[in-house]
Image (cartoon, rainbow, N blue to C red; front, side, top):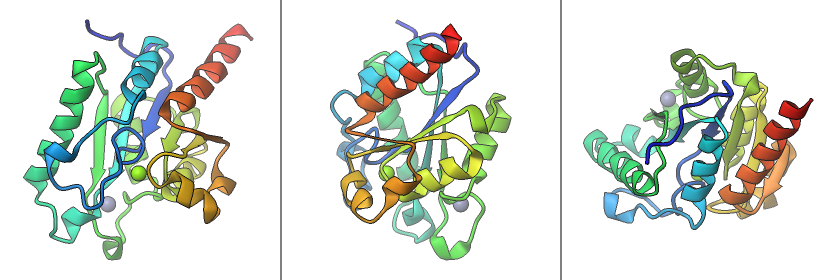
Length: 192
Ligand SMILES: [Mg+2]
Ligand SMILES: [Zn+2]
């Protein structure tokens, strides 16, 4: 069953590792991609409510020469296939392949990936929701004026301990709970 196209004009900008799929040290093979329990259902609920879904991911290991670009593509294809098995389609997936020392404009928390996605898909960044397990995700969200939601999966728990919660509008257990927060906000606005 094909899921509905975005109707609200609002988008959820999602981190990949530790947010949708399980955090793995040096993820470098498609076989290592495993969805976090409840993640696919959460994405399906968001899409059913008319929200667009876009993944923004830092993959510095490409820039460091540790992850070949074609392997990265296989990993992203695997993620898309696992989601497709659960009737979820992403609107887009944007990668920063640069190492930190390259000082690019797209490595989160810098806004480059979100700016590119907003231009391609025609949404207002400050109307977006940013969900991730890292301070960099919260920094990105703050930078574009989005609602920021930190999940405790992946590195989330550790990040909370080092202060990432200060940049988060909401701190939740996982993507499933994040979807609940987003749907509450969208539905309460629709009633106004
Ligand atoms: Mg992450
Ligand atoms: Zn970059």
